[in-house]
Amino acid sequence: MSNIPYKTYLEESEMPKQWYNVRADMKNKPAPLLNPGTHKPMTAEELSVVFCDELVQQELNDTDAYIDIPEEIREFYKMYRPSPLVRAYCLEKALGTPAKIYYKFEGNNTSGSHKLNSAIAQAYYAKKQGLKGVTTETGAGQWGTALSMACAYFGLDCKVFMVKVSYEQKPFRREVMRTYGASVTPSPSETTNVGRKILAEHPGTTGSLGCAISEAVEVAVGSEGYRYVLGSVLNQVLLHQSVIGLECKAAFEKIGVKPDMIIGCAGGGSNLGGLIAPFMGEKLRGEADYRIIAVEPASCPSLTRGKYAYDFCDTGMVCPLAKMYTLGSGFIPSPNHAGGLRYHGMSSTLSQLYDDGLMEARSVEQTSVFEAAQFFARTEGILPAPESSHAIRAAMDEAIKCKETGEEKTILFGLTGTGYFDMVAYQKYNDGEMTDYIPTDEDLAKGFAGLPEI
Image (cartoon, rainbow, N blue to C red; front, side, top):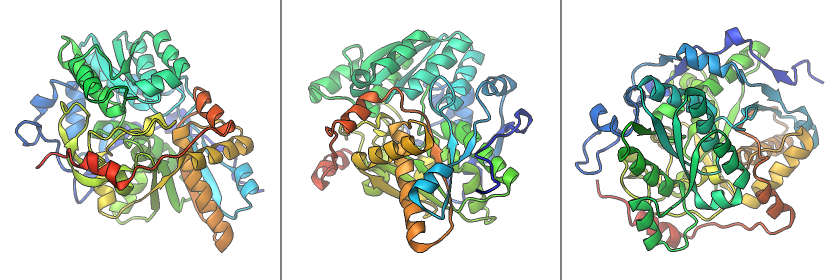
């Protein structure tokens, strides 16, 4: 066996003191958010109606490569960070591959995922601004759980709109949020104007992240002392999540290893953007090269089958317009079990990087994903989240290719969280009741038809 350890930890003193802003090194900057009424770039003043003031500044900042992490956030990070970089020796052996496989494990906190990295930052800035509380959406529930924890820490009210299918599939995740003091509403709901409108147009809908975003924004804008916070997609979120990649890079340097390829699941982009950030920075600056692969569900293939265009970030069309790879804000994904990846669009930053040919994308079907998840659980001992398992599927596929070619590639993937609240999904797979859904071109055309003309 190699003398490389199973797990590489950084010391607390080695944790990042600054977030890395990949946009500063991008030659082609992400296109600006547009006002849906005027189609002109959103100003800080306009965005501050929805978002916290300092978060607005982070959202619009595409020049500063490094932004200081406030001391209070770094102290909170110490409760569960630095997270381990793990060598998957058992998985390598089971696959019989010459590839070296590593994963960055982000599930070692109560929220069970990487989402807490941004949740605590956004709650901090809300508290600093003197707000009463925040509103948000959540898909599978990891983000809602993380935000409810962060709000409890700072004494803020937290209103969560949870995608209806996940609300029903994952009752225990819902109860964790309530335990931390959050109110949780299945979306779309009858409690908002936009929710009632969506239900009237799509009776019996199982919901989507786009629907839940619309409801959360409506409540935030209409409630004094509240702002809306988002768990993915936005530039500010990718900035906060850069702690993942920064720790990864430092841990690799500590053991004298360099990855050849970096793989992450892709829904809105928070995990993938955070994981690849410093590596992409090296690539952009011409200092190193990496093969970067985004993995998304075949049922919601925004990168692989979407259009690169300005679109609404939400189904109710109340949010700013973002230029991104999108399936159309009216696209309602099938109720697959990777709730955190059921978003119609992709981060504008990642969309620009993908369009510039700096990273790849592929889609995978959910039965194949759960096959990989089960194999990983049996070999590495961690039950992975369905979202994370998309990256596991691709990492295993690449490792098998190395076995066929004899190449000794070093593969890094993001293990974004654990799947212990996803047992309904695992039950469906184990009982042989899980099916795959791939939207037809006609299905996608309906979503594309609603794209705004810019």
